[in-house]
Length: 129
Image (cartoon, rainbow, N blue to C red; front, side, top):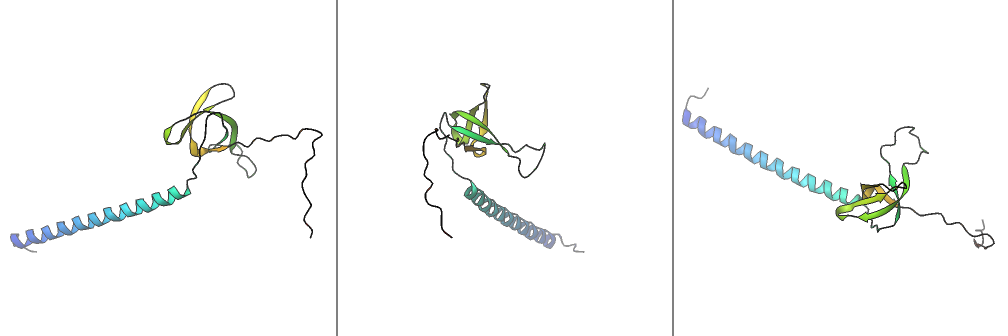
């Protein structure tokens, strides 16, 4: 045991300074990790632009009734009433009510257009094997 108060105090101050350095290094490493994780996440975000009166489908992440491969998780189509800043979108339901969702949960609805009867559609020559 060290009964010399002066040398014990100096040693304790050195330990406290080392602890402060370790804390600072951990903070810097955490900051670097968070920046890299954010950059990776931001790369995966698909930029989407919507306008009023567009038809969209909504991704339903809470669909757990009958989980299966062939069950669609997209519901809709819904009509966009308003596009708010920072990705929020106001949607209209068929009954006239409206609700707000994140724009990342939406995709454009490409409606099936039926070809009128009597109109010819040329598909071109089939590929030869």
